[in-house]
Amino acid sequence: MSQAKLYHTLHDQIALQHYPQALRTVSKLLRIDPSDPLALQTRSQLLIALDSYADALRSPASQGTSRLARAYCLYKLGRVDEARTELDALEEEDEGASDEEDRAREVLRAQLLYRLGEFEQARDLFDDLASTAEQDSPELPDLQSNLSASTSQLDFLSSVPSLISSTSSLSIEDLESRPLSLILPSSSSRTHAAPSTRPTPSTRPRPPRGSLSLSPTLLSRPPPPSDRWIPIRQRPSMRDALMQQKEKMRGKKRERHLASQGTQGAVGEEEGLKVQVGAGQKTGGGSGKKKKGKK
Image (cartoon, rainbow, N blue to C red):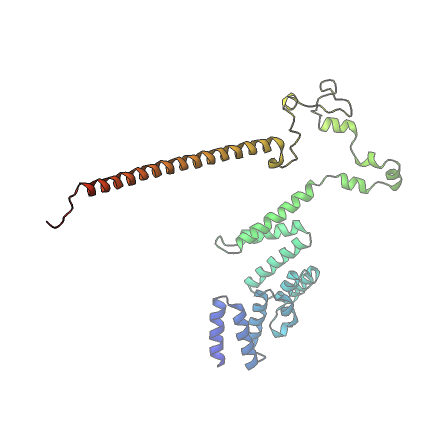
């Protein structure tokens, strides 16, 4: 495939955010021309988009990875001090950068300041960036979120009690002689700060040690059965109930059996009567007929 077709394919892959496929296309372009500056720069940007910051750092600035990209990779890898050094060196030597590059540097610097714990400077820088961003800019929500986080950190640090700083100036002798009295508030200050709302011993009598006070509702409940640990079917009361139920079922079966036998006997007697009546009719009819004979 020609270089022009590869660049056309690369454009479509980046537009569709198919970054792994785009990285393979860049590799094909670099096989054609290893010193292609556009392919080298695109490769560095694709590695950053794929979170391959260590791979992007292996490429020097002459091979597509700019100092700003290197500072960003160092920041993402947690090497904040190195990232700040790289960013300071970039601002000293690159004075003719575009407005977009300057803004990218400021955003990265604000993030570095926040990571380094310099929340006041980070808040001011995030505030400037958020105030100069367009209302429909995709970076505005992130800037506002970072500004809120910096402000929250400052509020937390300002609300830390001064007790920590006061205890840091104490001498070792004072701490050894009365350690708790220097750190914990006195009983009088605790009383004034938070008056106790619990009743006094005179209003709420305490039961003697070792005694257990039970409520009237609990005392009125019947005691649990003594055979509660025995399985239900094995308890004496349940065995009697089961035996009675079995006897009742046997009686019903016996009644049904006797009833069925009585019905069968009645039917048999009726059939016997029918047979006897039929036989008598046959006998009587034969005797009444005249025998035919020769005259």
